[in-house]
Image (cartoon, rainbow, N blue to C red; front, side, top):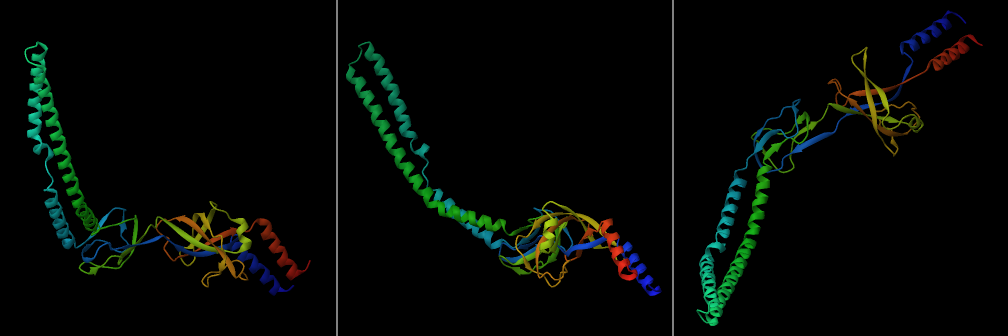
Length: 317
Protein backbone atom coordinates (compact mmCIF):
# COMPACT_ATOMS: atom_id res chain seq x y z
CA UNK A 1 0.00 0.00 0.00
CA UNK A 2 1.44 3.37 -1.02
CA UNK A 3 0.94 6.83 0.36
CA UNK A 4 -2.20 7.20 -1.73
CA UNK A 5 -3.84 4.28 0.07
CA UNK A 6 -2.80 5.59 3.43
CA UNK A 7 -4.31 8.98 2.56
CA UNK A 8 -7.60 7.35 1.61
CA UNK A 9 -7.89 5.26 4.76
CA UNK A 10 -7.05 8.13 7.10
CA UNK A 11 -9.46 10.41 5.26
CA UNK A 12 -12.26 7.89 5.78
CA UNK A 13 -11.31 7.54 9.43
CA UNK A 14 -11.48 11.31 9.86
CA UNK A 15 -14.88 11.63 8.17
CA UNK A 16 -16.32 8.81 10.22
CA UNK A 17 -15.13 10.30 13.49
CA UNK A 18 -16.59 13.66 12.45
CA UNK A 19 -20.04 12.14 11.94
CA UNK A 20 -19.91 11.04 15.56
CA UNK A 21 -21.14 7.54 14.74
CA UNK A 22 -24.64 8.46 13.50
CA UNK A 23 -26.64 7.83 10.35
CA UNK A 24 -29.88 9.38 9.09
CA UNK A 25 -32.63 6.90 9.93
CA UNK A 26 -35.44 8.84 8.28
CA UNK A 27 -36.14 12.37 7.11
CA UNK A 28 -39.07 14.56 6.22
CA UNK A 29 -40.70 17.94 6.67
CA UNK A 30 -42.44 19.66 9.55
CA UNK A 31 -46.17 20.30 9.40
CA UNK A 32 -48.94 21.47 11.73
CA UNK A 33 -52.69 21.11 12.04
CA UNK A 34 -53.89 24.16 10.13
CA UNK A 35 -57.39 25.60 10.59
CA UNK A 36 -58.95 27.86 7.99
CA UNK A 37 -61.38 30.23 9.70
CA UNK A 38 -64.22 31.11 7.33
CA UNK A 39 -67.04 33.63 7.43
CA UNK A 40 -70.35 32.36 8.85
CA UNK A 41 -72.41 35.27 7.55
CA UNK A 42 -72.91 37.30 4.39
CA UNK A 43 -72.12 40.99 4.24
CA UNK A 44 -69.44 43.62 4.54
CA UNK A 45 -66.51 42.97 6.88
CA UNK A 46 -66.64 45.90 9.30
CA UNK A 47 -63.47 44.84 11.13
CA UNK A 48 -60.93 42.00 11.10
CA UNK A 49 -58.28 42.48 13.78
CA UNK A 50 -55.80 39.74 12.87
CA UNK A 51 -52.28 39.97 11.47
CA UNK A 52 -49.99 37.27 10.10
CA UNK A 53 -47.73 36.03 12.89
CA UNK A 54 -50.15 37.16 15.60
CA UNK A 55 -50.83 34.83 18.54
CA UNK A 56 -54.53 34.27 19.22
CA UNK A 57 -56.43 32.42 21.93
CA UNK A 58 -59.54 30.31 21.38
CA UNK A 59 -62.61 32.48 21.96
CA UNK A 60 -60.97 35.78 21.02
CA UNK A 61 -63.28 38.27 19.31
CA UNK A 62 -61.37 39.29 16.16
CA UNK A 63 -63.87 40.93 13.85
CA UNK A 64 -67.40 41.85 12.86
CA UNK A 65 -69.55 41.38 9.75
CA UNK A 66 -72.36 43.87 9.11
CA UNK A 67 -75.48 42.65 10.92
CA UNK A 68 -77.93 45.49 10.22
CA UNK A 69 -80.36 43.55 8.00
CA UNK A 70 -80.40 40.52 10.29
CA UNK A 71 -81.02 42.70 13.36
CA UNK A 72 -83.92 44.56 11.70
CA UNK A 73 -85.48 41.26 10.60
CA UNK A 74 -85.18 39.97 14.16
CA UNK A 75 -86.95 43.06 15.54
CA UNK A 76 -89.76 42.55 13.01
CA UNK A 77 -90.25 38.89 13.92
CA UNK A 78 -90.22 39.66 17.63
CA UNK A 79 -92.87 42.34 17.07
CA UNK A 80 -95.07 39.93 15.10
CA UNK A 81 -94.77 37.29 17.80
CA UNK A 82 -95.59 39.84 20.48
CA UNK A 83 -98.76 40.83 18.59
CA UNK A 84 -99.87 37.20 18.38
CA UNK A 85 -99.17 36.48 22.05
CA UNK A 86 -101.07 39.62 23.10
CA UNK A 87 -104.28 37.82 22.09
CA UNK A 88 -103.74 35.17 24.76
CA UNK A 89 -106.48 35.42 27.39
CA UNK A 90 -105.64 36.26 31.00
CA UNK A 91 -107.30 33.27 32.63
CA UNK A 92 -106.90 34.61 36.16
CA UNK A 93 -108.54 37.97 35.34
CA UNK A 94 -111.38 36.51 33.24
CA UNK A 95 -112.34 33.97 35.92
CA UNK A 96 -112.01 36.31 38.92
CA UNK A 97 -115.77 37.09 38.99
CA UNK A 98 -116.76 33.41 39.02
CA UNK A 99 -114.24 32.64 41.75
CA UNK A 100 -115.71 35.41 43.88
CA UNK A 101 -119.22 34.04 43.32
CA UNK A 102 -118.05 30.58 44.37
CA UNK A 103 -116.48 32.01 47.53
CA UNK A 104 -119.77 33.77 48.43
CA UNK A 105 -121.77 30.63 47.70
CA UNK A 106 -119.49 28.53 49.92
CA UNK A 107 -119.90 31.00 52.80
CA UNK A 108 -123.67 30.82 52.34
CA UNK A 109 -123.53 27.02 52.32
CA UNK A 110 -121.59 27.04 55.59
CA UNK A 111 -124.15 29.39 57.15
CA UNK A 112 -127.21 27.35 56.20
CA UNK A 113 -125.55 24.08 57.24
CA UNK A 114 -125.03 25.56 60.69
CA UNK A 115 -128.66 26.68 60.89
CA UNK A 116 -129.90 23.31 59.68
CA UNK A 117 -128.05 21.55 62.50
CA UNK A 118 -130.18 23.56 64.95
CA UNK A 119 -133.32 22.78 63.00
CA UNK A 120 -133.72 26.49 62.35
CA UNK A 121 -134.22 26.00 58.60
CA UNK A 122 -135.37 23.08 56.45
CA UNK A 123 -132.80 20.75 54.83
CA UNK A 124 -133.95 21.89 51.38
CA UNK A 125 -132.19 25.24 51.84
CA UNK A 126 -128.94 23.38 52.51
CA UNK A 127 -129.41 21.29 49.40
CA UNK A 128 -130.15 24.39 47.31
CA UNK A 129 -127.00 26.15 48.62
CA UNK A 130 -124.84 23.09 47.92
CA UNK A 131 -126.27 22.83 44.38
CA UNK A 132 -125.45 26.50 43.77
CA UNK A 133 -121.82 25.90 44.69
CA UNK A 134 -121.68 22.88 42.34
CA UNK A 135 -123.19 24.85 39.44
CA UNK A 136 -120.77 27.73 39.84
CA UNK A 137 -117.78 25.32 40.07
CA UNK A 138 -118.82 23.63 36.82
CA UNK A 139 -119.15 27.03 35.16
CA UNK A 140 -115.62 27.93 36.34
CA UNK A 141 -114.20 24.65 35.01
CA UNK A 142 -115.86 25.18 31.64
CA UNK A 143 -114.59 28.75 31.31
CA UNK A 144 -111.04 27.73 32.36
CA UNK A 145 -110.99 24.89 29.81
CA UNK A 146 -112.16 27.21 27.06
CA UNK A 147 -109.63 29.90 27.90
CA UNK A 148 -106.82 27.33 28.27
CA UNK A 149 -107.62 25.85 24.86
CA UNK A 150 -107.59 29.30 23.30
CA UNK A 151 -104.25 30.09 24.98
CA UNK A 152 -102.67 26.88 23.71
CA UNK A 153 -103.90 27.56 20.18
CA UNK A 154 -102.38 31.05 20.21
CA UNK A 155 -99.10 29.67 21.59
CA UNK A 156 -98.93 27.17 18.72
CA UNK A 157 -99.62 29.99 16.30
CA UNK A 158 -96.65 31.91 17.71
CA UNK A 159 -94.22 28.96 17.67
CA UNK A 160 -93.08 29.38 14.03
CA UNK A 161 -92.26 33.01 14.79
CA UNK A 162 -90.29 31.91 17.84
CA UNK A 163 -88.29 29.45 15.72
CA UNK A 164 -87.71 32.14 13.12
CA UNK A 165 -86.43 34.47 15.83
CA UNK A 166 -84.01 31.77 17.06
CA UNK A 167 -82.65 31.36 13.52
CA UNK A 168 -82.11 35.11 13.20
CA UNK A 169 -80.47 35.25 16.65
CA UNK A 170 -78.09 32.48 15.55
CA UNK A 171 -77.31 34.37 12.34
CA UNK A 172 -76.74 37.51 14.37
CA UNK A 173 -74.25 35.71 16.65
CA UNK A 174 -72.38 34.42 13.61
CA UNK A 175 -71.72 37.96 12.36
CA UNK A 176 -69.23 38.16 15.25
CA UNK A 177 -65.93 36.62 14.11
CA UNK A 178 -64.67 34.47 17.00
CA UNK A 179 -61.30 32.74 16.79
CA UNK A 180 -61.93 28.98 17.28
CA UNK A 181 -58.47 27.66 18.25
CA UNK A 182 -55.36 28.94 20.00
CA UNK A 183 -52.36 29.39 17.73
CA UNK A 184 -50.45 31.61 15.32
CA UNK A 185 -52.03 33.32 12.33
CA UNK A 186 -50.30 31.95 9.24
CA UNK A 187 -52.14 33.67 6.39
CA UNK A 188 -54.75 36.41 6.17
CA UNK A 189 -57.18 36.12 3.25
CA UNK A 190 -59.54 39.08 3.76
CA UNK A 191 -59.50 42.69 4.90
CA UNK A 192 -61.96 45.11 6.50
CA UNK A 193 -64.49 46.78 4.15
CA UNK A 194 -64.45 43.81 1.75
CA UNK A 195 -67.61 41.83 1.04
CA UNK A 196 -67.66 38.25 2.28
CA UNK A 197 -69.99 35.28 2.26
CA UNK A 198 -70.67 32.12 4.21
CA UNK A 199 -67.72 29.74 3.80
CA UNK A 200 -65.29 32.31 2.43
CA UNK A 201 -61.84 31.98 4.14
CA UNK A 202 -60.81 34.86 6.38
CA UNK A 203 -57.49 33.60 7.78
CA UNK A 204 -55.48 30.46 8.49
CA UNK A 205 -54.23 29.59 11.98
CA UNK A 206 -52.18 26.75 13.50
CA UNK A 207 -50.94 25.81 16.95
CA UNK A 208 -47.14 25.88 16.61
CA UNK A 209 -46.33 25.18 20.27
CA UNK A 210 -45.98 21.58 19.17
CA UNK A 211 -45.21 20.66 15.58
CA UNK A 212 -45.30 17.43 13.59
CA UNK A 213 -42.36 15.96 11.67
CA UNK A 214 -43.69 13.61 8.97
CA UNK A 215 -41.04 11.11 7.90
CA UNK A 216 -41.13 7.96 5.79
CA UNK A 217 -39.61 4.59 6.66
CA UNK A 218 -39.18 1.39 4.71
CA UNK A 219 -40.67 -1.96 5.61
CA UNK A 220 -37.37 -3.12 7.12
CA UNK A 221 -37.32 -0.11 9.47
CA UNK A 222 -40.81 -0.68 10.88
CA UNK A 223 -39.54 -3.30 13.30
CA UNK A 224 -37.39 -0.84 15.25
CA UNK A 225 -40.00 1.87 15.88
CA UNK A 226 -43.24 1.88 17.86
CA UNK A 227 -45.94 4.28 19.03
CA UNK A 228 -44.92 6.40 22.01
CA UNK A 229 -41.22 5.88 21.32
CA UNK A 230 -38.93 8.85 22.00
CA UNK A 231 -36.56 9.81 19.19
CA UNK A 232 -33.96 12.49 18.52
CA UNK A 233 -34.83 14.97 15.77
CA UNK A 234 -32.17 17.11 14.10
CA UNK A 235 -32.63 20.26 12.05
CA UNK A 236 -30.14 22.64 10.46
CA UNK A 237 -29.42 25.51 12.84
CA UNK A 238 -27.10 27.16 10.35
CA UNK A 239 -24.75 26.05 7.56
CA UNK A 240 -22.43 24.20 9.94
CA UNK A 241 -24.51 23.38 13.02
CA UNK A 242 -27.58 21.31 13.78
CA UNK A 243 -30.11 21.72 16.59
CA UNK A 244 -31.44 18.61 18.30
CA UNK A 245 -34.95 18.09 19.67
CA UNK A 246 -36.76 15.27 21.43
CA UNK A 247 -39.83 13.94 19.69
CA UNK A 248 -42.45 11.27 20.31
CA UNK A 249 -43.82 8.92 17.65
CA UNK A 250 -47.59 9.40 17.75
CA UNK A 251 -48.75 7.76 14.50
CA UNK A 252 -47.48 5.08 12.12
CA UNK A 253 -49.41 4.48 8.92
CA UNK A 254 -50.74 0.97 8.41
CA UNK A 255 -50.68 1.37 4.63
CA UNK A 256 -47.66 1.59 2.35
CA UNK A 257 -47.42 4.32 -0.27
CA UNK A 258 -45.04 5.18 -3.07
CA UNK A 259 -42.02 7.15 -1.92
CA UNK A 260 -42.63 10.92 -2.32
CA UNK A 261 -40.21 12.50 -4.79
CA UNK A 262 -38.98 15.01 -2.20
CA UNK A 263 -38.08 12.33 0.35
CA UNK A 264 -34.92 10.26 0.65
CA UNK A 265 -35.04 6.94 2.48
CA UNK A 266 -32.27 4.88 4.02
CA UNK A 267 -32.82 2.19 1.40
CA UNK A 268 -33.02 4.06 -1.88
CA UNK A 269 -34.14 0.85 -3.62
CA UNK A 270 -37.42 0.84 -1.67
CA UNK A 271 -40.25 2.17 -3.78
CA UNK A 272 -42.88 1.94 -1.07
CA UNK A 273 -42.72 3.49 2.39
CA UNK A 274 -44.80 4.07 5.52
CA UNK A 275 -45.56 7.55 6.84
CA UNK A 276 -44.69 8.29 10.47
CA UNK A 277 -45.69 11.36 12.52
CA UNK A 278 -43.41 12.59 15.30
CA UNK A 279 -44.65 15.29 17.68
CA UNK A 280 -41.94 17.77 18.70
CA UNK A 281 -42.17 20.58 21.26
CA UNK A 282 -41.36 23.82 19.47
CA UNK A 283 -39.11 26.45 21.01
CA UNK A 284 -40.02 28.87 18.23
CA UNK A 285 -37.28 27.82 15.81
CA UNK A 286 -39.21 25.08 14.02
CA UNK A 287 -41.29 26.20 11.06
CA UNK A 288 -43.81 24.53 8.78
CA UNK A 289 -42.03 23.08 5.75
CA UNK A 290 -38.64 22.89 7.49
CA UNK A 291 -36.54 19.78 6.81
CA UNK A 292 -35.84 17.43 9.73
CA UNK A 293 -34.01 14.16 10.30
CA UNK A 294 -34.12 11.26 12.74
CA UNK A 295 -30.66 10.01 13.50
CA UNK A 296 -29.63 6.49 14.53
CA UNK A 297 -26.43 5.62 16.36
CA UNK A 298 -23.87 3.18 14.94
CA UNK A 299 -22.46 1.39 17.97
CA UNK A 300 -18.74 1.11 18.62
CA UNK A 301 -18.67 -2.45 17.27
CA UNK A 302 -20.13 -1.27 13.96
CA UNK A 303 -17.50 1.46 13.72
CA UNK A 304 -14.61 -0.91 14.44
CA UNK A 305 -16.04 -3.36 11.91
CA UNK A 306 -16.08 -0.61 9.31
CA UNK A 307 -12.46 0.26 10.00
CA UNK A 308 -11.48 -3.43 9.70
CA UNK A 309 -13.28 -3.62 6.37
CA UNK A 310 -11.38 -0.59 5.08
CA UNK A 311 -8.06 -1.94 6.39
CA UNK A 312 -8.57 -5.31 4.71
CA UNK A 313 -9.57 -3.61 1.49
CA UNK A 314 -6.53 -1.38 1.25
CA UNK A 315 -3.81 -3.28 3.15
CA UNK A 316 -4.91 -6.91 2.92
CA UNK A 317 -5.46 -9.31 5.80
